[in-house]
Every structure is written in structure tokens, then in C-alpha cells.
Image 1 (spheres, rainbow, N blue to C red):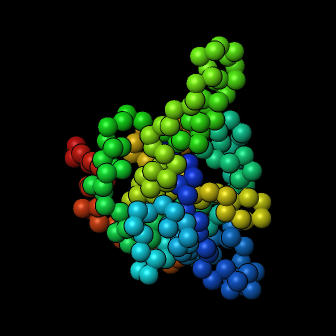
Image 2 (spheres, rainbow, N blue to C red; image 1 turned 120 degrees about the vertical axis):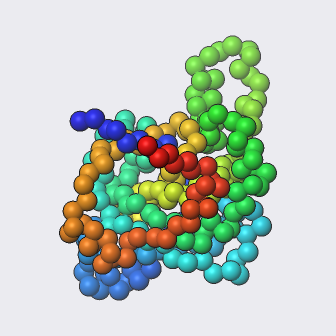
Image 3 (cartoon, rainbow, N blue to C red; image 1 turned 90 degrees about the vertical axis):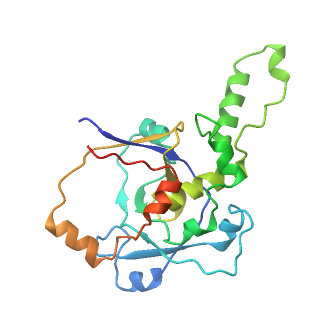
Length: 234
């Protein structure tokens, strides 16, 4: 089956989330995969402090919406292409908190530097790739140190989370429903892509569920324009 929809992905943007009212849901015996489970989350201030420049932890951040979890059916190779951990068993679409984008200046120096590169590289992935390449060669030239790429790990998390603040992403969980990582969707070309089927006609029943579970988020047109989103009228 063809996959006409594809997204570039920034693996592991660095945020850590805490599920709101999780104990209450467990008392009702509602599993995370149950479609009746409305799930909201908060981003831990500790992870934001390691990502956002000049982060002010005294300012409260709104909760975000998390879709019910679904089992992952992708083979190992497809997981590699999409930046999904091998031990991930479940995934969920994760809406960014409406005010997360307020923490970023989309004209800051890091994001301006991003405009000068054709592809956004995950520095940890790039480092492993270079080490692997060097291990295959015994040339003396390979004794030189591995260059520090742009972005650095901290810059990468800053960029990836600023992208997540606009477009959202996917959260991945292990067999015990523990969070493994959050991957951000990206307009910038990366080494990782996620292919999806569709689009499909939305049924009235599905639309009603989205409304009943409060799974829609407000978004500002100005925000997506500043982040580089372009629309065309045909």
C-alpha cells in the first residue's frame, strides 16, 4: 500500500512528560490504550531547564493532550528509519501545550543558524555514524578527532522542542507504558522519516470522539507562519 504522507522527524527532542490524573484512570481500570481514556500531560520543568535558553521555571505551563496509546506494528528496519526505539511497543500522538511556543524566540541565534544548513542533524546519531565509519578504516587520517557538528546536543534539543511546540510529535512507550522518548515533527529535512497512509474521510463518530475527549488544540496562524509553515491555495 502506498504511503502518500511523510514527515521528517527529530528523534528524542529531550522533553520528559508526566501524565495527569494517571492514578485516577488506573482506579477506573482504564488502560492507556482504551479509547475512552482522555489523557493530559505536563512537561517536567527539569527537562525544560535543560532545553530552553533562559528558562523561567516560575512561570506555569499549560497541560497538553495525549492521544490514547496504540500498539506499534512496524518492523525493526522501519523503526530505524523513523527514529523509533527498538523496545518501543506503543505510541501516541502528542499535542504540544498551547503556550509552549511562548518559551521560544523564533528569531534567536540558534534557530537563525538553522536557516543556513540544508539538513538538521541529530548530533548523537551523527557521532555514532562517524565512529562507525572510522572503525571500518585503518588509515592514519582517521586518528583525527571527530569534529563537533552543528547543532550541539543542547542546540539540537532546543531546535527540536521549538519545532514540537508548533507541530507536535509522537511519544513512544515500552511494554510497561513507560515513556521512552518524544519525537518532534519537522519541516526541516532530517535523516529520519515517518510514512503514513491516508488521508481518510473522517466519520461523524470519530469527530464526536475527538470533541468529547477534548483532543483538539487551539493554534495561532501567526505562530506557524513564523515557524516557516507555508500554505497554497489551488
